[in-house]
Image (cartoon, rainbow, N blue to C red):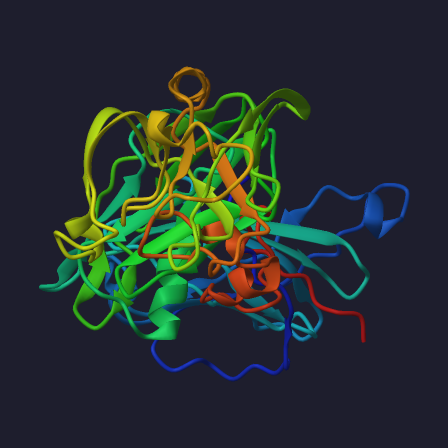
Length: 426
């Protein structure tokens, strides 16, 4: 799946120039009949659509184009119109744009990259419908003194469960929504098999990406940034980043029913084990909802003082715990609890963790991996928070998750990059 955005739509028409544009003026069909030997203009080879090409500003003098200005293509001849424009740089980054409804003008709607070489392919048709084309190339100059925004993707390369979100950590805050949209459009996620997903801004420096549903089992997920050189805001441009590839293993979901005191493990849709457990007692209820395995710790010392229980109180404890599978940063685990075997399957007596026998805990520890799903239902506890205490991302329904994106509603995740926007019929 990939998070690529393709703004589509038609402009208002007309020939007005945009302020601060890099301008390409293309005369359409001058002195060209566009007819083939059989007299049908639609069967002709595309003619050269321009006998005049001019650039404004520094481009006229043979210097690189200003990357802070937008790109505009104009049909100067009223007998022809633009039907399609594609602009792409040598690294494969497309420049999004908008074509006027009457085909008179196309202009870019996403920023140009600095220090880049672009190829622009313009398709036209004359008044008889004969096709024309023109291919242009230009380079953009270096930006002025600016800060570079770096992006670090997570988790580390490896194999994870189907619940593992992808993360992007920015090295500088981005709070403006328009600037966030520039960043988000450049953060690409592709998966094989392909699934639909999108980014969600956790805060000004962190984004999480997840599909609408869990990742497929045995998928390959590739993450990259095309932000390098792109203007984000005044004195802020995209910097370099390292791409990331992760894979998913089997679809493993552990469902804990706190009311029934049972944990059932499913692998690729089939039940493989049911385990008697104990969960949080009154006042220490286990969180409901979907959690993601964060880590597996063979040995953990658990002390009540770390969760706010005073030493010496009736609820205090200091225990050495084996086979601890962590699901929150605040200390919730699935772990061996040999001291509560008599209650497992019958009563909830823990301080919030899911406890089971040592043998079952070892089996669970060996079966799950980081990114696998641990879901709790029918507990009196609150629902796992989406962020800040692990990965509770899946506890947001899809509309709420999608609302955390900075992109507009019509920028559909997973579509192909394109700078071409055809005019609507009039």
